[in-house]
Image (cartoon, rainbow, N blue to C red):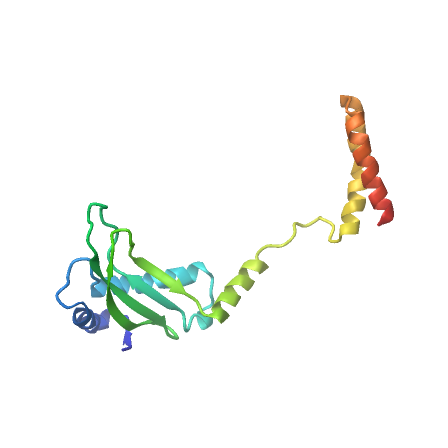
Length: 179
């Protein structure tokens, strides 16, 4: 099955849902729920900043039925609709029913391909870097720390903490000399 998710295809989606769900009407999905689920899946892709050319192949599973009270102790029948992202639109690829207990929540669950996942991770990694002005090597960091030791010793002398700070500053200077 492959039905394009669009307002013009709501009757075809509704027919597929009713064929799958049978007589069950409570906690099952409607055609407008599937349309909303597709827009939520697209919003999730937008939030990941995934380029439109890489969105092909992403899948989403929509499970109908929200939470119910814990007093509802029996399993309930819900709809599970599998959506697949095409070049520009979402498509319904499978519809089935499932019996779930009250703790099961409905919603849209997005799954990315390995290529999409790598692109999202690369984009996130590119968005952060070392703050400007920090030395880029350990040797430069140690030497910069050794230069700060004079200030630390001055403050320690004024505050009366010479015994505590002098061994530390001596150790930093010795390390800087080795580097």
